[in-house]
Length: 341
Image 1 (cartoon, helix red, strand yellow):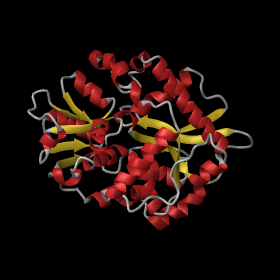
Image 2 (cartoon, rainbow, N blue to C red):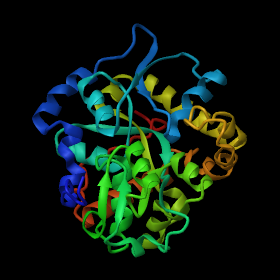
Image 3 (cartoon, helix red, strand yellow):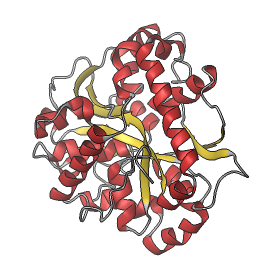
């Protein structure tokens, strides 16, 4: 793959065909997403089964080991990547999937009314270089080769935002190699790129092997906006607005389940090391396992309310100001299930 061969301008990259589905086709799928998931009185839902190698991979084992499901009856549906997961949501194969505010806004521009209803993850996108690299900041890497997550992912979009608020245009200022996380790691390990932008727990595994973390997207966001880097939200649990309205008790139970799982992480950070296999980290990587309880707890937020919504709104405002979305959505693409229906 030649540097920049498949790059698009920033608007095209963000839209990416509504996760691969265009407006009219996407709209025709919405009815399939609106019907209740379970039978009479059940709290059933088809939810995303997060893959190993991602920060959300520990939520299911924490849920099951601590008996948090209660009346929920969950069917886990695997996805092969960001676009595939959202396509499954729009087609009705999934009721709930993870998505960020920009993804929801882009979907809305194409006619799909998606809404975020529950916390998921704070931003955990990191910039790393090899141990012996001369580069110290992302700015030093302008014009250099950088492996990144897929360009339709929340991780990529947040990296674009953080670059934009610092006067940089990610897709023009760097030679990007967007692709699956494992592909980016392979490029980095072989020395085919000068840096990698990647998510947790992969960043921690690289740091444990000697790579240097030179920045986080949260830090870059703070640098460009003056806001707290710890409040930069990456993604939430989301669905079609119709599904949430017709299945509000299910959505509320899912939201509470997620908060309870995150509270366990904050109360007992060692659980992250205990669940290293869920992260896809083998027992032989002892250095990485030891780092998990210190590097990852803050990416599991324990609040879904005004502070979060202010950050989501700020992300959309910045995205519009730099041309990443056309306009602010007419209706906020998030909802507080604790408020009156």
